[in-house]
Amino acid sequence: MKVFEPLKLNTTVFPNRFFRSATFENMADADGTPLEILGDLYNNLARNGVGTIITGFCYISKQGRAMHPYQTGMDDDNKTAAWQKIVSRAKAANPDTRLVMQLAHAGRQTMRAMTGEEVVGAGGKRCTYFKQSARALRDHEIESIIRAFAAAAKRARKAGFDGVQIHAAHGYLIHQFLSIHTNRRKDKWGNDKTLFLRKVLEVVRNECGADFPILLKISHSDDRDLATGDAIETLKSVERLVDAVEVSYGTMEYALNIFRGDCPIDVALRVNPLFNKIPGVFRKIWKKFFLGKYLRAFMPFSENYNLEGALQIKEAVDMPVIVVGGIRNFADVEQTIQALDGVALCRPLIAEPDLVLRIKQGERWVSRCTNCNMCAINCDSKNHLRCYKGKENAKTKF
Image 1 (cartoon, rainbow, N blue to C red):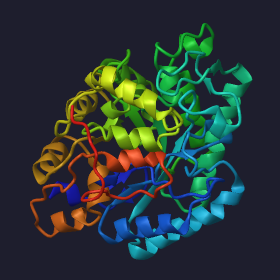
Image 2: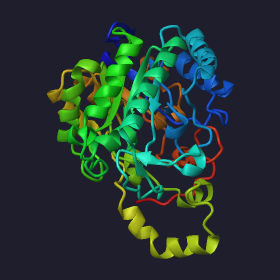
Image 3: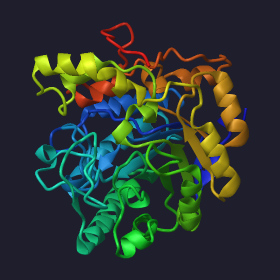
């Protein structure tokens, strides 16, 4: 079965074609140092045959962290030893498992209350979801962020990671530079919208060496202006710098269009720091008069919903292509792997961390994940990542 064949990226052999897509774990201390429970999670995934584990997004600088208080970071040397322990535990469970650290800068998609600094972005346009005033980055600040990506990648290699994934999707800073909606600059960073991404990849490559796998995560389209053709042109400009691309969708302005499914609105209003300070009476008014319009902006769940965009990319670029989004059964896995190079899973592995092992043993897997999105919404709480199936599940379908 092709999905269990090895995949060579750069000089590294990845044991199979199953990737645990970056999944926010909420398993760090307030300083971004990973906790021991994160090692338990990765150990379990490795033991159950997941070929490659991509970490939840790690910030490269305090300025670039997201609004979550327990997000992991790789922004200073003091975190390297803790990450080494995490990697070692996964490798002890399965020496063939590959671990890849996802590196990100949130840009305008964060809160000043969390970063303690001005919210910045490719431009000064405020995000409609975070509603934070944003300032366009100055040239010297952009150069500093590029160096921070390189430094974080170097720490990841020192900690034992088998590669890094640069997060250029979901409306975070690199995505902001790629989009004409958020990048209206008149300088070199606006005239060539792929320049920032290209420079990040170049310095990571120079810092980590020619043999170190660099993966890229990109949205093939979003809800504003980016289309699959734009993603293809971006990837063509960085082909020589990237060892594989993971294809996703969207931005945090319409977050549920990234992962789709149910909207547990009452839980979101209770745990999300953007909403939980709103007095109860105003929440009731909003739900009565505005919730319907809010929900209509979201796309319904469908199986393998990013496959078509990924297929267009595969046909146009010369690099391995991995897809994430809506893969919920063995037939989806077969359909994906016939045309692409890797299958990335997020919510299914939260619900069933042993699913890869069961597929290998011959099970024609059908996911137990119901797309209730309680796991995703509770990323904004203090709870560690887990499946909530059978627990509280107040949801609104759309």
